[in-house]
Length: 439
Ligand code: G6P
View 1 (tube, rainbow, N blue to C red):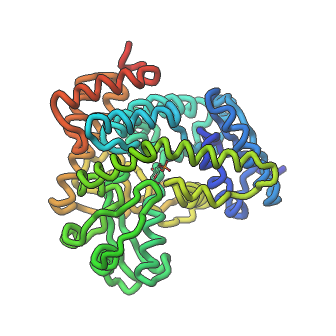
View 2: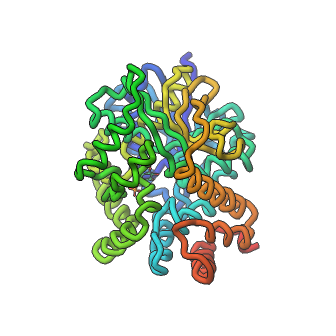
C-alpha cells in the first residue's frame, strides 16, 4: 500500500487555496501527497465548500492520486498529519476592515500587519495559533507547522516562545517575489544569484551577490531607485515611494513595507485618497474575493484563475510548497523564512523569530549567519522587535498595560492619549476575539 502523506490546511476556505493546490500538483513527483485536508470554521463553511470543490476539480484534472477532504472538525483533520499549514484570518475580512478603518479615523496608517491594525491582528491570531499547537502536540506530534497567517513573524515567534513548538516555519511571499523581479532587473537567472535577507517579517533588508562573488547590491539599488521608474512591488502596496538618496546609503535593499516607515506621510495621504474612492484595502479585497468565489463556483473551472494575482500574496505557493517539499526531501533549497534567531542576527535576542535566508533541510531551516546591522537599520529593527515582543506578550496575557506599551513604541501609532483611545476603541471592536482582555 502507498505510504500516506498528509497535509492539513487550516483556513482552507481562503481564496488563496487554489494557489496552494497548484503548487502541490506541480511538485507531486517529489511530494506524493495522498491526503489534503482543508479545514475551516462554521463562518467560513460556504467558502470552504466552494473553494474545496474547486480544489477537488484541480486535483482530478491533474490526474494525481490525492484526496481532498473538507471539514469543519480541526481535530479530526489533524490526526497523524505530516505538515500543517495555517492561512487563517481570525475574525475574517470584517475584522481586517476594522484594523484598517479605526487607525485611519485617528489619522494613522490602517494596515493589516503594521501599526495598530497589525498589533490587533496579532492579538486575535496568537491565541488561535497556540490552540492549534496544543492540538498538534496531541494529534500529530511529529508534524511541521508552516505558517502564513498574518502577522506571520509575530505568529511564528508566539509558536516558538509560548507554544514551545520548535517545528515551525513562518512564510512570506515578499522575498520570493523580490528574487524573481530583481534577478530580471539585473539580467541574471535567479539561481545564479545569492540573495541574503535579514531582519523580521515585513521589515527586512537584503543584499545580492552573483556567481562570481561580485556584490551587485548597489547596482540593483541604482536600477530600482536611481532611474525614476519605480514600479508596483506587490499588489497591495501600490507605489514604491522610496527614493534613491535614502536607499543608496543603506547598501541594502529594503522591503516594500519599509514604505510605511520611510514615507509615513505619503503612504497615509495615499491611503486616505484611496479610501475616499475604494474604502480600505480589506474592502477592496472583499470585492476581489467576491469575484474570485463567483469564478470558483464554475464547475468547468479546474485551474487557478489569473484574477488571483489581484491579491497581494502572489507566489505564496512557491514559498509554501517549496518549503514543505524541501523539508520532506532534505532538498536544501535556499529560501527566506521566519525561524528562531539563534544568533543569526546579532542585534536581536536568540529566542526571537527572524526572517532570514536559510537552507531548508530535513531538520528544518538552517539560517545563513548574518551578523550585525549598521545603525541605520539596527535602530528601527530593534524597536520593531521590541514592539512585536510586547504585542505577543499582551496577546498571551491580556494585559492592557503591555498592549499600551506596544502601541506607544510603534512608529506608526500616534502616542499619548490617542494611542490609549485607539486601544480602547479597537479592544471594544474586536471584543469577541479577545477573551484574554475581558476576563
Ligand atoms: C503581501 C504580504 C502578505 C499579505 C498580502 C496582503 O503579499 O506579504 O503578508 O497577506 O500582501 O494581500 P491582500 O491582497 O490581502 O491585501
